Image (cartoon, rainbow, N blue to C red; front, top):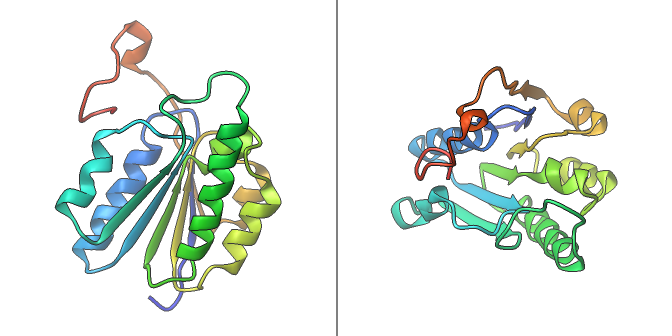
Length: 170
C-alpha cells in the first residue's frame, strides 16, 4: 500500500472491535502484518489468542483485569501512557495495519490526551492503515480520520439479561 488511511469505529452499538479484527483477518490473509494495541483492556478475551494461530498478528494489552467503571486509577493512566509509547514505535515499524482498540475510551477517561493521539496519527509511517476504536470518539479524532463508522445500537439482547458469551462477545 502506498498510502494508509485512518479509520474510526465508534458509537454505542456492538461491533467496533469485531470490525477491527475482521479487517485484521482480511489483512493477514492478504499477506499483511498487523499490530493490535488494546487500551483499557486487560481481560483475556477470545481474540487475544489469535497470535497462537496467526503469526502475522501481534497483540499487546494496556489495561487492568477489569474495565474502568468509575474514576481511573494512576495505574490505568500509566498503562495507557506506556501503551501509547509502544504504539508510537509500532507505527514506525514494518506493519501494514495498526489497530488502537478502545483508544477512544482511553481519551474519554483522560488516560491519554487528544494531542498525543493526533500526534501519533500524524507521525505514523504514511503507508500504515490505522484503525481507532471505541465509543465517544472526540470530534478532533473524527476530523483527522479518513473513514468514520458509527455503530448505533438499535436492539441488544444484553438488555434482556443475556450476558457476554465466549466467542461472541468475549
